[in-house]
Image 1 (cartoon, rainbow, N blue to C red):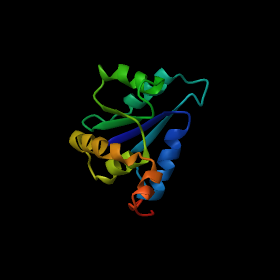
Image 2 (image 1 turned 90 degrees about the vertical axis):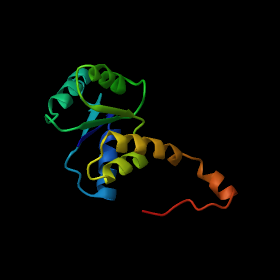
Image 3 (image 1 turned 135 degrees about the vertical axis):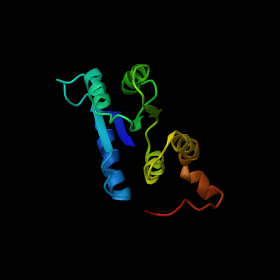
Image 4 (image 1 turned 60 degrees about the horizontal axis):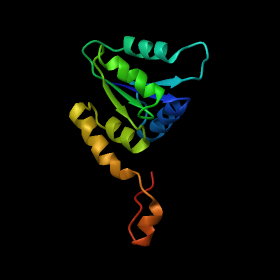
Length: 136
């Protein structure tokens, strides 16, 4: 599966860099960093990303912010292009999806569901004496 991380600014590149530390090399992972080159429009970047989709292969696009311009541009492209779009990019979600050798739509949906609980105020865990998890 081709995976594209798309963000305002260079967040997507930072996520890719961190994923490389955690999971190793990910050759099917690419990024779209919007608004970093004034000579390239977001619409053109999205068009270019979708043009690189390999026929017959699934593509997953993960954006940073629902309702933001990056997500909205991909939303507009959904009608004419076959890819899966997920918003709310975060490290636990990406690690879960990319740890699967060949994630399908069901695996992506399961990752989204399970990662909703990964956002928390850790101070609350200390108040009840819970373990905050392992170090990487």
